Image (cartoon, rainbow, N blue to C red):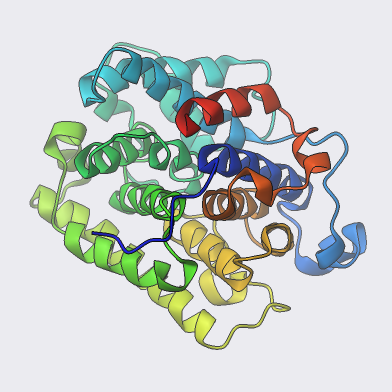
Amino acid sequence: MIPTRTSTPLAATGTLTGLALGDALGFPTEFDDVPSILAKCGPWRQMRLPEPAFVTDDTQMTLALGRAIRTAVDEGLLTPERLVAPLREEFVDWSRSPENNRAPGRTCMTACGLLAGDRPWQEASQIGSKGCGANMRVAPVGLVPGLSEEQRSGAAQLQAALTHGHPTALAASDLTARAVFLLARGAEPMGLIGRLRSYAYENGDRYPHRWLGDLWRYAGDPSPEAYIRRGWDECLTALDTVQEALRHPSPETDPCERTGDGWIAEEAIATALHCFLLFPGDPVTALRRAACTRGDSDSLSCLTGALAGAHLGAAAWPQEWAERIEYRSDLLSLGALWDA
């Protein structure tokens, strides 16, 4: 039983809106160091949402995943057999879309090119990659109502594995979906890291055969348990960095200095948690802090926005910002479906 306050009102809408807002805020600052960002944007606590508020592949792939889940659930209970086909189709369609012009990740593009054929999806997975593209898009899995823990965990890892086959990419995606789920269900931020650590320990040796099939064999590990354990061990180490950073919080210091730059999956969730937990009651400041970093600022701020939106709901975001985010109608459609 998870000790919680009441569930967050309109958590799904808040999560998806926050994710997209963070993505748009961090889009212009990605690849810049902090001095360059400050020179371009002014003081970080006053960063403005760009006009127009364009997003990146992070939001585009989140919507692709959301649509795939909606299609799968329309057929009945969420199973790997129901999810794989629409997920492949959505990812391939995204990769070929003329709107896919936001510097998409190489791993995603390579895997999607292979997914377009008829080979088993495990052969398309980029087995050595644990880039943050695996978990930047996973938030919808934490929002779908009525899933069992096995379904939520399996779907989170499966959607990651279609492109990123490193076990840390899978574990970090599972952990990210779990964080969104807990916050949307009313978990208090103060105890979040402890709950995520417990979850990582409990799942450390659980390889979801039903969802991943024989993916582990492609990595060369001696067993499926050894394969997945590598991922959870790295995630536990990343959570340790967050705990340590928050013992002596330093809001004016680039969070990447303490918890990593976020280009890889475990650092992305660690630094997003860091930014969110520095300002759990001030979501816009949390987004700005994540966007003004030396690291993968669009993915960091998009994940921070997902966490803050799950915690505080749709009311977290300034109406003027929310009304002009790109793909607003698509975000609201999925949010309304899962909030209902």
